[in-house]
Length: 422
Image (cartoon, rainbow, N blue to C red):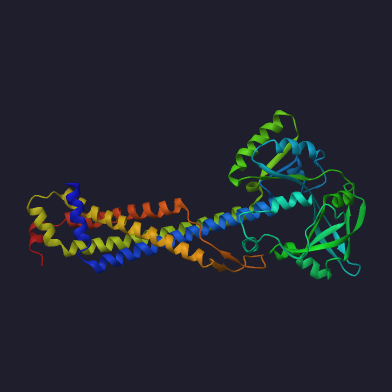
């Protein structure tokens, strides 16, 4: 009986080939749009996540206990003063790829004629390079995603005891070039004024204009000398995979607690306010797109099935007259709707995959600079199995459900009137 209904549904589906083809076209274009847009959203999430982690936050940041609450008021209170011991504890976990330390401070930078505000970060150069390295990306992709771009000179090395790297906009404002000497002025951890001359060894662009206007990076030893301390503010942990963040964070919390180490930590997700805001925005947009496509499916297939009912009134009356139950008529139309969704869904997945592959093959598509950024980027399409599955299943379900009303209309026809319909 089931196979008979399927055979009848297939024959009826292709009675009006033009209408069926138009219905398939609507399903395929809707699914392809859903797959491509969902893949673009996934790429955006991934790219923003990795550009947040690698050049900026790391996967996990570790502080002295109380720093996250009091650091904004007094950034030099509750500093980490035993980084080597902390590093040995963290590196014992197999998922840890790199550990580094940072000491940040605000101050003034001067070329003798002009003095500007700056935000400086003291780093361990070689370890910071490991943090910023993202092996799966080419240089062009790193630039497109907003990774740091070296414009002139070189990155810091441990041998450059008085070197400094400046943001592009800050170097332009100071008219500073590689090899020039500038003066950094700040206050020590005890509130005393301190200054040091540094040599510009490199100029970088971070793609964020506002940050480039204040960005200064110096070796950790320079920052510690300026602040008159041997401590650091935070330890940055880079893992082998972002997906291991929560597992490693929980393991470190348990280890710190069991050994009585007065430390606290935050994951990159806890610190990434901008990332969370973008995810909320795109989730809302993607939800609206999904609703629109589902509604289009619903009305398109319902229209096709309703027209099929009107064209087959006498046939429906004949089936009823020879003893076919109402449930049989309903099943016939539901099977037709199911087949429309099945065939259209398969074709839609194929077209969506081909479209995504072609977009990626031709280099993606250009996106204009986001707010606060100085350059746009090339966007690509991620092929996500969950998006393909969602698109296919939703098409199948909506196609079947949209056949309910036409099926009910078919069963509500009176046999005598249906037989006399012309």
